[in-house]
Length: 320
Image 1 (cartoon, rainbow, N blue to C red):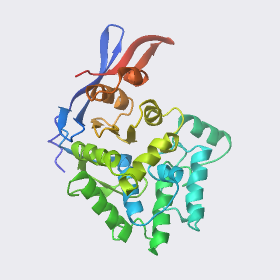
Image 2 (cartoon, helix red, strand yellow):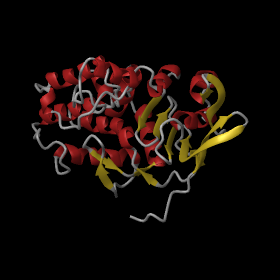
Image 3 (spheres, one colour):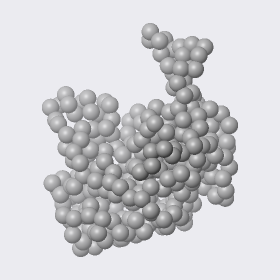
Image 4 (cartoon, one colour):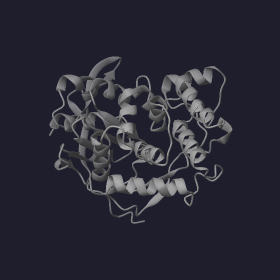
């Protein structure tokens, strides 16, 4: 590990308080036009990053290619970082039950619900961390269901040598057009691959541009049809998909956001310090550059900064 070399990140978002700039969020970003050409860049989008949960839609493609057949709502949860609401946990349990499995078969880490309101309600109801409540439980349920379809071992489904993990690696490499040269482990226990932002934008563009009925298009269509399964109530990713027709979006821990438009244009960004609050405001200027109607993006463009309960500033993406 070389701690003396860092990606050449640039300012992507700025927070003001009163008349002063209070904070600046650095990062890297790429926007591809509908033809796949680079329309704009900030920072170093060719540098490798871990896309974290933004990989989930690509992993879902691999599962469908392996023969998994599930309804759209279930597929959306397989690609989700869900808030842990009762509906999310119900659907994850349904995926397992349809495969003859139970939550005890899950191999993901335990956690409280990710959503703020969902977590508070869960704790008020007297619950603690569980695998089903953890935000990746839909993905893990679908991974197990894929193993059942193929007669693959269940207890070792997270082992890098497992045939499903090998298929996922091949699928991610194909969709991104990049070799998987650095692999680690994500928070939930699955592998996570170092990829460029350009590769991730390319992959999401391929999902929305794929022919109807293909695994790629099935994943994109399921996520767009069930945006609240992909994240949840009061989550910006779900709200953005509801606001912009045909848009596909997935976030990831450590400041990752990937978006594809119905025409095949795409945006991928990484906030350098891993902070979440600048992720969506930083994406908005790139979406505007790709031609998204500003009227559809108003609520995502600016976060209000309060002082004494009153607006005194804002957090906004830096325009291009």
